[in-house]
Image (tube, rainbow, N blue to C red):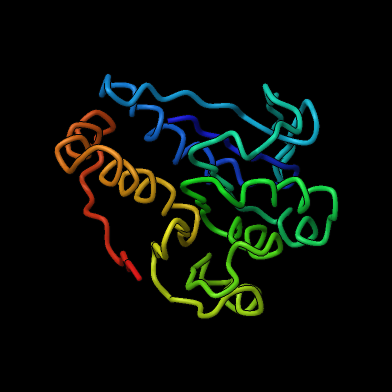
Length: 192
């Protein structure tokens, strides 16, 4: 499994880190052989508060990944109209799993991935998502074919656990939950 994490200025880093901390644990299950790249259009990415991290792949071909993950953040509001970014994101149209959390779904929508799909986002952004998809489902996680979208920031952990259940099994989820001391049960999962 080769994962591409798509980062951008104005990201909410918890969207990314919550998912990343869980999903990198796929390597505990040897048969998976998970690798990943932190991708962006520039060498450094800053969040809404000024925290900066470096990316290791600048504008790679996104079609090479098995799973593409797009987090959210206030930067998505403007970025969905950025032609360079949206064209780059559009390279992922044949990727096996296209995944977003929070307002990352707005970027997927702007790239055309949500057309004829049901999706979700942060509850405060449901109206912004409506023009991009067939239907906004007011739930925490929505899987419609190869597209998996999730709600607000805290959903990033549940989303990653859900993907582990798809790629490995429920036992792997329980092992990871024990490792991260996560006592919660995922709720609001809709599979179309």
